[in-house]
Length: 459
Image 1 (tube, helix red, strand yellow):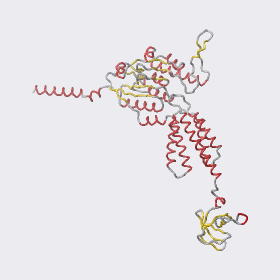
Image 2 (image 1 turned 120 degrees about the horizontal axis):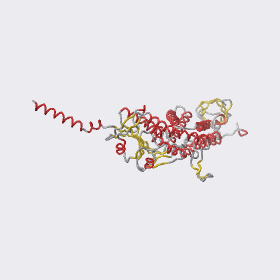
Image 3 (image 1 turned 90 degrees about the vertical axis):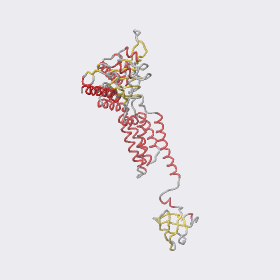
Image 4 (image 1 turned 45 degrees about the vertical axis):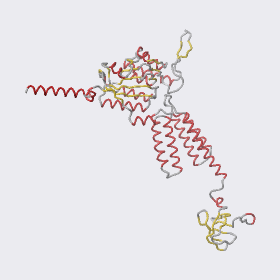
């Protein structure tokens, strides 16, 4: 009996060990590290992508979220939305500039400063965080002109708005640096002087926390570190042998990435407006109206997410309205005015200089050429209409062929222009005979034999 109990206990122990050693069970017991990759310009799609990933990380109780970045910058509004999500996250966010050759410039520097732990791969760089949305020269750049003491003198922002935007950016990045215990002075220098640092330089300047060759090296180095998450709670990271899982952007983020491209939203707006114009010109066509309405709403939704100049949008709408008037009442002058207003509005439309969010000159040129072609087509049609024969009224009836339906002495009825008309003439005609309309008097046609001329040259 004792032997059987010992054998049973040993069997249970072996089964438990095998179950523990199964790959699925081992992974379930290992911590989870979710990876989010932001490549290219930062915009509404990037903000939506990170928000979805943080929600998923919270639901799956991930240990950390690794935010891999390789970005030249982006929109200020999207950057602040991402930073707000990072600061409010209950899951620690590890900023990681990778792979080698990547950079986190402009908005990427702010986001890296906001993360709980900032890391860079060898061969990467950060910095150049000067706000440039308002255009003009970079504020605070050295002038290269020494003062009386022989020292280089820095230009102060001369424009009030430039100074306000720069000072606000400085205060923002300094607050992030103080929150995470990083070098606030260099952060201010990155904003005012567009300073940059390599990975090792950033580590020496205490702008980041560590340099890691790859994600595995990153997990090894941050294991056991204490970070403060939302609500002031301190969490010790346990990332040794963590399972790394990449989270791809959802369809909403992919959709936003497409339509928030200023060029795509601009084209959607044009397709929508053209569709509605064609629907109004040919009521009942249905397809142009449906496609135009959908594209117009998508274009307006995308523009609502972008920092646009409403004066430029207003000029574009005025130009389109003038072109629509030109289509129904050709005057040429209105059409040319519409083209000029539209081009000026398109140039002014997007008021941001962030990389990846500039309206392409080629797109503006193509659309302007289409509108100019539209005006030229209307102009050609107007010239042909003025030079061609009359299409309506008494002038249009003269010279038409007609068929005699019935005739009594000098009066009868003829068929022409798809209608039955009362007619009169100086000759006697037989039913079925072909005649020619010479004139129309009080809805009565004056007819004659083809080629006949009355006295005086007219009837």
